[in-house]
Image (cartoon, rainbow, N blue to C red; front, side):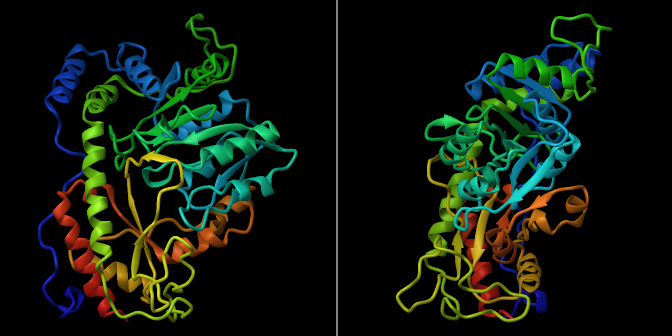
Length: 419
């Protein structure tokens, strides 16, 4: 069958769902009310406070602070946890760059360590090996909507007296062993950036359990003021990192439909995984390399079960970490075991009407971070993921489950003609 990239008919011509979804009636009403009131700033109305309280309650902790974006949220939370210049913060190598730059913004040193080769979340063993007397905190990232190994990471933190700051940017509504992310460590930060499961274009919220951490975090976001203190009293150094009431008005009604949207994405992902079980394309044995530029079919790790002929399935879903009760499915991560040039795969899939994302480069390969003082540990699993893992984006996951067949049909077509 002729590939679309070569002039053939694409597998899919219908558009995927757009993101964000159309405004709900509740969003429209609340935003209009705020606009007409003229009370747009966080210090003028009550919606930012209401949103912070709602997220704190959903995270099973008492305190929340809204912020202009999640990068600033991670920075402010680090300040609230007492992390500062000279301290080290351990972060995963397979994550968005803001996990590192927020640490640098706090004057601390990001220590980039490897992820689990199976589920791609921060490895507790790698964290343990990277701890030094300067280590102050661990920043697990709940990647793609599934929770990290919080039992293992918390055990390391307890042994060494470290703070745990959860990067929940991709995991609104996720559950770990029945408990909501965000409230599992000392603080958690959610993102409302344009691609996220709840969005106001930008924005974020910090949640935490300890009253002292809350007070320091709030002060960092509010120009060094103290809760309940004088307006022109600034006993601490702080910044204006606040969200607006307009953004909070977009976000508060979203909480009423979050579970329904998570269920929709999970249904689509389950359908993709079922369809992948029937995918068959020519491929080499598990130990065979793919040639220049492609992944090595054997680097995928133990998540890809070996078939009876000694080969790996062509494509597998990156599994959820143990302990996942609910994956909020911000992304569907696929591990491509079939030999194929990566750039060809991405271009050919896009031509078939099924665009995939190439995912993260390992943080340790970014010279800007190392030049800023980041310490990089060996990260072979993250490096392998950067060669073998591709993503299906959140907007596509909002399609009806029968749309999953387009993803797998396009994969079969492209991988069958791989070059």
